[in-house]
Amino acid sequence: MRKQVTAAVVTSVVAALLLVGLSVNACGKHQTISGKLLELTCVFDVAEGKKFDKEYAQKRAKTGSPLVVQLDDGTIVFPVPVKDTVQQQSDKLMERLGERVTMEGLILEHKNMKVIAPDKVSFDSEKVSSTNLP
Image 1 (tube, rainbow, N blue to C red):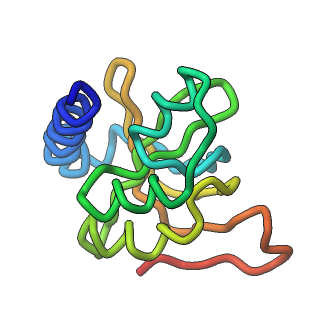
Image 2 (image 1 turned 135 degrees about the vertical axis):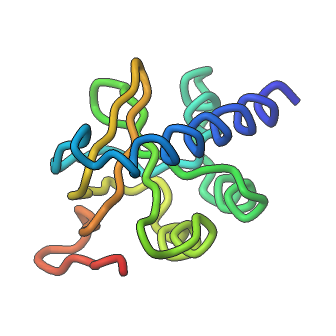
């Protein structure tokens, strides 16, 4: 229950930040980030010593729990779509949960929260190709 409430609160805060942040593009920087693609509650599970469960993560993501990129330093970055809906972006990324990902795009920061509007997404398991998100 706590995780569902936390996911709902974080999703609301991210949405609010996007409404403010994406309308003021000058405050963002184009950057590249790399980390592990996870569903939000899995970040907490792994921190508590539980093993990553891809099926569970996909099930949670299908119910609307946000996908995040956990950087090597532990920072959580929320990928937000520019043209797709959040669910369309999640559907595109869901099969790759648990994999290392590199995203290039506009990074917005507010206090301890970061979001990225990715133009390019590539996975370490792909040697050369990258997937451009529309």
